[in-house]
Length: 330
Length: 277
Image (cartoon, rainbow over all chains, first blue to last red; front, side, top):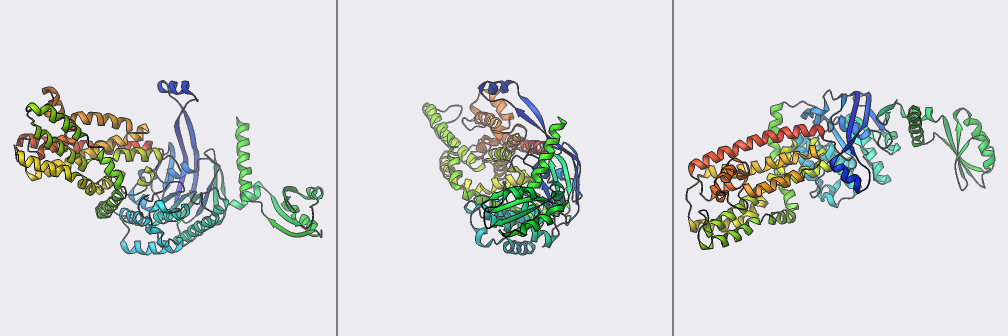
């Protein structure tokens, strides 16, 4: 469904120093630098796959999504989405995809969302009956209710985001590019959007490529992750496997009835946090059974949980590793 | 909820774009109503012809100037005002700001050419614009009726000239707006256009009052066909030969500007950086 081969994108960016002198100098002699936003990126996504697209800020995720959706023309390399070249922006391509950007909206600001839905119905040529049934379903899944009849400017961020998702799906796209769809939303709204996307993808068999800074979005929606940093591919595969290979530890969190014996605990594993009487320890995977037995044998331990460490930490570790290798290469 | 993946042939796509037109016009009109205060205020900034009217009336107090009497200046500038109010567009501002802020992306993701979507938005605002243009047009009609016309302009020519004014204004404004894709903003080039337009379109002074060579130049440049030509046709100041030659030139410019706008847009979109995320 999505084939990316040796994809690169460079931007020519004007640069100048601070201050009046530099500003005047830039009037006569403008200097540019070439920024390599995406470099030699290759991956493939099969129809119906749900893939998380991860990387730190400025890694090139959004630039890649914009190339996949035809907004940006690649500097080199090739992209095919639904067997079509995105930059040609053929109508059948535009009907097959949708791009939702958390910070950009397509809703008409002064009109109720229902007008944007109707606008999209007309532009995408969705038959009236199909539109009506789709609106009914989207309203139910996203709990839109009367929201669609209030002017967009009067909706809260969460309400607007739900309407944005509905507007983006009116034409029944088979490929969803979601760029930070939950950014700025409160926890319950993040959960609602996540559940909606999962239901939609499940019901339609749509292909999903998602970027998000909230690892829970990726964990709950995606079976596979593509990780990029500084425009280059760093990892492509199973997220949990990645996390386990980066941090081959288990996190044991113990609640003590009295002050925890930190000296003894440090002999068992690495103390990650110590808050009041709660201690989180990272223990090598092959030693966690003994560590758990040691803790459970102590009468002052009143609760114990064993988990994988949060994915965010593993990702931070991955990005730190790639930065260290960049510095070493320099 | 199955995804729509059926390939629709090109002809059907064109037909569906036409079928979409009533909905798009309705929404364009709703948007113009939502912004009615702003639109009306914006149109009030077009009252410069009334200042010209006052000035030229004083100049013509002692007798006609360049063939224009006081009442002829009055009817000329009132018609200019009405035509400008009915046919102006703000597409340059829209394109320029959408390019700068990255909102053009949302238009590019829809299977409707962005220029067509801008055109429909501008057309949707026409009823409100016409409403604002009615008072000066009514006064002009009253003045013209009392003054009489030199040549009766055929109705079809009048309609063509007025539609031509809108089309030329839109395509030129859109072409200038498309420069934002190359330069980051189109406001500078638009100011240059506005300056030349004020002089050569008949907005501030009838081009017939220019010295011979300048008047001939104005006859060949596109500015007059984006305003003054239609006003002169309304007022019956164009002999049949002048009228039909002018229409030919006006629509020729419409075709050229349409091609240029599409070309600029096509080339510019390749450079579009879709700022923001």
